[in-house]
Image 1 (cartoon, rainbow over the protein chains, first blue to last red):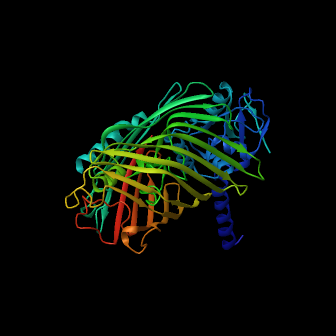
Image 2 (cartoon, each protein chain N blue to C red):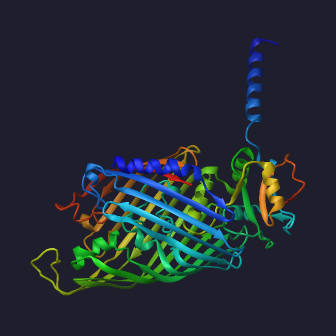
Image 3 (cartoon, rainbow over the protein chains, first blue to last red):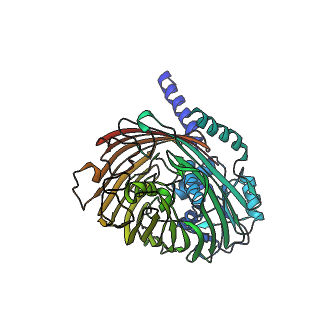
Length: 144
Length: 391
């Protein structure tokens, strides 16, 4: 293996590690709801509307209350996939509702485990976790 | 100025640990900002901006609670100082009971922020905007207290017509809005026009807002309209503006880090002045007869755009115009144009700073006789800066 080939290989491995460690991809995020919520699926638009304060129910009429993560790769992936904004812009939009009297800030939790616990214990709660996170206590919504 | 800056910094340090408290269901949020303005010519907003002025401070605190799934209540208190405007008195920004039957049927009552155009209800909430000053042709910072909120009730909701037709948000409201006797309108219309400061003022208001989140998901179009009047009394006379309609059309496109928006408004008020004791040769009584009717045809528009370079840094620019088409449009007193470039840096989710440059041409907005006794030059440049803390 000559030196030039080895340096290309090394560079390729480095790039693979760097991008492999990148933020969670959208398809790795699952939307979860309290087991008492009747809906089994929802559209992306419904999820976006709920998490931006536009609506408080899913397409089938199920009332839900959003809860968000404080930050992290799963949080960023969720915002990118469903809201189309970064965290700063997302929080700003909620502040606009709060300071004009049109909404209250959604509950935030520190970790995905705390998210699962909160959604499991709170009627109507809707949140999100990484696919690999244990979430047997709650229901997963299919996104159509 | 140093004392004011130290006060702001102290407030931020001691308020920091509060964060956003959630005492059972009660949420407490707040913000405090400190601004600075410097203009190359003229003085704006009753401040000595040609020397540099930091007489611009805002603070607010809100409490809200979900009494039940359907009923939310809340109140926000606000205090501001902008040159000679405002003062130490706490004002109620809004205080509402909000009852939500479902997403299509909601009712809010109390002192309600007025939804009109893109930014009327949030124009005093600096923390949510990139801009240090919103386009003054639409959201004059020295007059905002008159247009911000109304005592009354709103019916509102959102109807979702699916991916192919989009969503429509609608609102209709009725109420009364009182004239802020410490605000810009009262100062502009009081002594210079009626001859003395207003002692009472206000008007009825009926309005509606319709906005369509189009099937092109990032595009919002809408129209708002207000029908309102104004009555003000002073010791030397009174002012009556009969009911007039104020429609505004707007469009906003927001995708990822990019945003573009524009609004257009045309307002044709008629001012009926009645003056009790006029001395045509004296001051400050204006040199006009006992009764006079003045008519305007004010046309305003702006275009703006912004881009989020990083999660912490946002930049943007806008061009704003207002002009009275009823008179000679070439006279500087009858128009105002403003070209603006702006930047905002968020240190973290609580602290931020803004810096903005204005290139202003025309003198129909934001100038006061007391701070410009020798008149104004047609053009001026202005630097605006602001730091803020919100939780």
